Structure formats: C-alpha cells, structure tokens
Image (cartoon, rainbow, N blue to C red; front, side, top):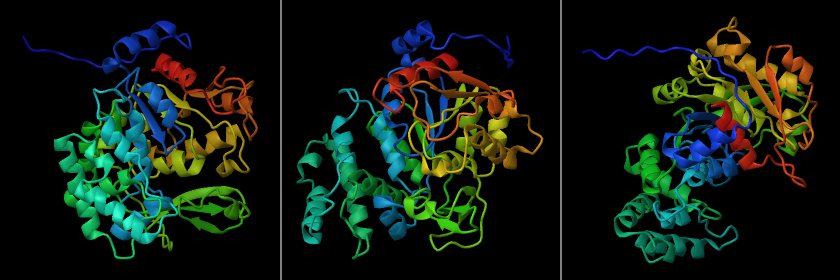
Length: 399
C-alpha cells in the first residue's frame, strides 16, 4: 500500500520552562528539537555547550563577515570567509567525552603566542606541521594525518609576511582544508564536524567573500564587522542601516544569495531564534543574504528574539521596540513588505528583574505588534549574562 504523508499546523499551550520536556530531551538528545539560531561569535558559546546535552539537532547559522583578529589576516591572505566564529561554534558543540576527539578539540583551541618573536612562531608552526608538537602527537593516527595535511597546505601557501602572532591553530587548519578542497569551505566544515563529533550543524549564512558596512545617523559609513559598534565609530551616531560591500576599502553595495542548504535548514526548524549577540553585526547581518527572509516567513514554527543583557554598543539609540521594528524591516526586505509580523517574530524573551539591559524595555510597544513578551528569570544573582541552563530550558520548552 502506498505510504501517504500530510503536513498540518498545530497550536499548543506550553509551560515555560517545561520540566518534563527538558528531561525527555536530556534522555534522548539525538532526537532533540531542531532549534535554529541566527548567531555570531562568542555570545552563544556557553549556551551551545549546554544545549548539546539536550539536542544534537540544533542549527547555527553564523555570520561569515568577521574582519578582525586572526580571521582578518586569513581573509586578506586567501580571500576566505571569516572562519573564527565558525570554529568557535564547532568547538562549543563538540563532544567533550572520549566519544568525541578531545585531542583534536584541544589542538583547534590552541593559539600561537600573541607576543612571540616571528622566528619563534615560525618554528612552532613548523613543529605542528611536522607532527613533533605535543598537541599534534596527542591526536590519534588517522586524524593526525588529516590535521598535518591541512596545516602543511596552509604553510605552503601562506604569504611570506603572514603574521602568525596570536594565530588560532583551528583557523589555520580550516584555511588549509579550504585550500586542499579547492576552496570548498562546506566540505571542510563537514569533515571537522565529524572529526570532533559536533552535536549540531554549523554553517555560514553565505559563501561569498564580502564585508559589512554600517551607515550611521551622521551619514558616515563604517566598513568592517570588527569596527562596527566600537568606541572609535560610536561618535558617528546611531546605526541606521547595514549593507554588504566587496572589500574593506568599501565600494558600491552588493547583494548576495544564501546557499540552498541553509535555506533548507530554516525550512525544517522547530524554533527560530534571533539570538544574543551584536545586534547589527551578528543578528541583522545574517538576514542580508537573499532568500533568508522569505524562508523565515514561510516556516510555520515559533520565532523568538533574545536581546542582549549588558552593553551592546550597536544598540545605541535603540529601544527594545525599535530594535524589533528594525528586525522586522530586514526580514520584509526579502520576504515582502506585506508579510504579517507573526510570520517574522512571535516572542521576545527578557528578564526585566535580573537583566541589566542598556536600552529601554518598552514592552507595551512590542506587544502592540501582537508579539508576546516572555519575562522570566534568565540571570543568576550577581551576573549580568543570561544563564545558559535557564535559557536552554526555555528554548526546549518552546520548540
């Protein structure tokens, strides 16, 4: 008999947090919900380390436009996407027991001395490539060969003046894998996800080598994700818009497409989260590639915004409601101006008692959109940051 399947939409009431659902996920994380995050670098790292114990199916769409630190040096040398935030999330989701590869994770997390002499740094890289370095020796045989092959390719192709100070070895390995695999970053991310048993999916939101540019109230433009929201650019005033440009020298705004795999992942999500992180550089940047907004609006699942506690310089001049307005606007640019708000955002999660927000929580204006505001204890006493365990329990309950 022919198998028949249909898709139906359901509405349900949930208790948040739902202890029963949380416990069920803890017992069977391999069957956990597909929680989808629009995210940047470190803001969601600790939450990811907790989340992997409850679901192995979370999806992390990472902005690839990082233009600072070790990623910046690699981007300039090889015209590669910013891999630092991708590596960061891979490591946060990696299996930390012996079921994974803790030796590979330790190597990926290692950095060369930021203040080391160039010759000393070159010699240490040489010992990593040759396999004599203790961190490489600790990696099991077959994995060690893969790591050394990728590091060797990086070393062979790096410019003579490449600055190794403070370099992340994980970033260098990913860059080498990018070169080994004919500049196919997706294959490299897949390979290392398997090597360290990543409990989730980590992908860039786009595959184009471009940069972010922010337009300020003063009319000035800040180019480069690493400069947006910094003290030296704050004097230019509120950020009014965000666009993509071909290089750190600027240029005319360009549009890029999201890749089809990322769009498919949005289409299968059980919960979509606009997560903590830099408001423009992490959240809104992920909404710029064409196709993202349309797919978000098309997916029938809860959509949640989790604003930062603490300071976010990119929120200068914004309140909670005007930030929500800007998020809705960015999705509608791709999905269509007439897309209802409830297709874009359903809930905002805050802690009005314990959270130290540096912007106004004008909850009534948010609710006027028909968006629900969930106000729960998310922080612990004496801490400004959202507690990862508390946040994970909320996310599992809503998914």
